[in-house]
Image (tube, rainbow, N blue to C red; front, side, top):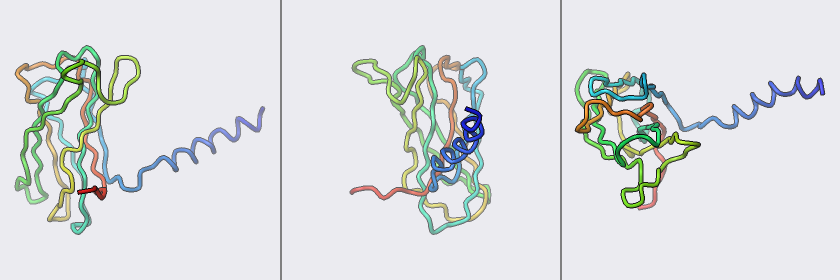
Length: 162
């Protein structure tokens, strides 16, 4: 039994190393206080690009409770290059629940669901340096109760079938 307890930290380390995604460059999530996303909150994410020949997939992470009052989320992003110039600014609609059935999408346990949306596929960054990505909720309501967190993930682009 004592040997098993000594092996647990080693097993945890090995499983953690094998679970790492080698293509991932950056991932960070921001939790909202009181599980409510206010229109005044504009989470900003900064990440470094060293290889301008590589293409990247940029994902938006969303965590919501089943009590979230809408089936979708409108989110606007603003991506700024290291020189301060805007790279892109788009409005995205993300479906958190099936509009017909109301069934939650994403992965979940209990009443909490995690979603990862491919927002900027095959993105090319033309400059090396630190990029800034700002997310804004773009719904008709100033306070969005039930939205727990948002985040950004940047990974090497995955080859897709045409």
